[in-house]
Image 1 (cartoon, rainbow over the protein chains, first blue to last red):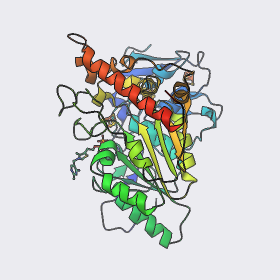
Image 2 (cartoon, chains in turn brown, cyan):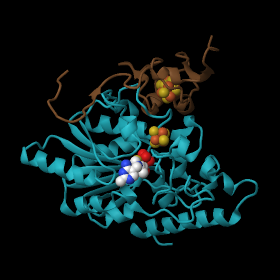
Image 3 (cartoon, each protein chain N blue to C red):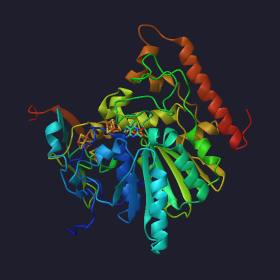
Image 4 (cartoon, rainbow over the protein chains, first blue to last red):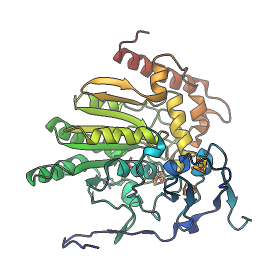
Amino acid sequence: MKKYPIITSISYPKKGAMGKTGTWRVFKPILDQNKCVKCLQCWIYCPEATIIRKEDNSVEIDYEYCKGCGVCANVCPTKAITMVREGEEK
Amino acid sequence: MAIKDLPLEEHYIPGSAACPGCPASMALRMVFKAIGKKMIMVVPACCTSVIESLHPYTSFDIPLLNIAFEAAAAASSGVAAALETMGRDDITVVAWAGDGGTYDIGLQALSGAFERGTNFIYICYNNQIYSNTGIQRSGATPYAAWTTTTVGGKTEFRKEMGEIVQAHHIPYVAQTSIGYPEDVYRKVKKAKEIKGPKYIEILAPCPPGWRFDMSKTAEMGKLAVETGAWALYEVENDKITFNGKSKLILEGKMKRKPVEDWLKLQGRFRHLFVPERDEKRLKEIEDHIDMLWRRYRSWVGIEK
Ligand SMILES: Cc1ncc(C[n+]2csc(CCOP(=O)(O)OP(=O)(O)O)c2C)c(N)n1
Ligand code: SF4
Ligand code: SF4
Ligand code: SF4
């Protein structure tokens, strides 16, 4: 990465700038691919950009950083995403 | 615009300092998608100076300048002037500030930049409070809302920033809500193509500030529009168009929902419902919204 010779405090982009924010979760979004209709609602609304959109418009969840807010489960029209307490998922 | 047509391009990097369910993060993702990396974002003191994460790292993969609370528009003017001098017309200058930094302390710098014709987009994400410092009232806080400085509920109505900005007769003014990310994207994209000052305000329901469950941010942004507590519109060279559900409400094709539907879900309005209903203030809120919609209708020449 190019570093800039600027005499002030300067921050550089990094994944997990605040660490593994997946550890903040109390509830975990679980996606049932069979119910998913690839509408991308979860992708567009996820605040943390942790719904990964694939080329074929299917989606996946980045659990390393997902904060467990539940927005994705709430906007999903087919209830393909359910929030399950951490440690209690099957 | 269909969701699938929005770019995959992402400059909001996961692992930020934002609260779960943060509306500002949602909106930033849309702004980054609409403009891309060829921008310089100017951020005053606000939640976003935290959301972007701590030195020496950042969660935003774009060039960004942090500046004093009151100075977003002034610093943007400097950045825009420098770019113009360098002959760089391919870079979009975006001021990104909260409602405190816009309605209150940054207002004179904002007015000055608009009056000078500065070529930039000023975006206010409006969470109706000073949330970064722990939920104090701002000029955007609605009547009767609890904040840490209005414990019995705010005693004044919020001001209409959209109208104040329109009085500058700049080329583009828009109001949108994070309940409708495609609307946010479309408006930012449109503003990018227009030269001169542009103003966009995004209603940003904040879970800790408004006291609602963090999974309901999108729903809150939609309900604000469906109840008429917030309006989606855009003004191009002084010609106003209402958008989405707000257009339907304006033209009488959809009845706006009772504002209670939106208030009831927010802990900051709890004192209007328990221990007993505060009919007086509930009516004052409905009446105020009715007054606003009468005004909106008069703008587009619809009588009554
Ligand atoms: C001159 C000055 N006064 C006060 C502050 C402390 N301060 C930092 S952020 C902030 C509130 C910002 O509120 P707003 O603009 O609404 O953005 P939000 O925090 O809601 O995102 C305050 C009061 C400051 N940084 N500078
Ligand atoms: S729970 Fe929240 S952070 Fe996690 S994927 Fe869903 S919307 Fe994104
Ligand atoms: S919102 Fe639900 S149906 Fe739509 S893409 Fe996401 S998981 Fe699939
Ligand atoms: S307080 Fe509200 S606006 Fe600020 S980071 Fe948290 S959710 Fe976002």
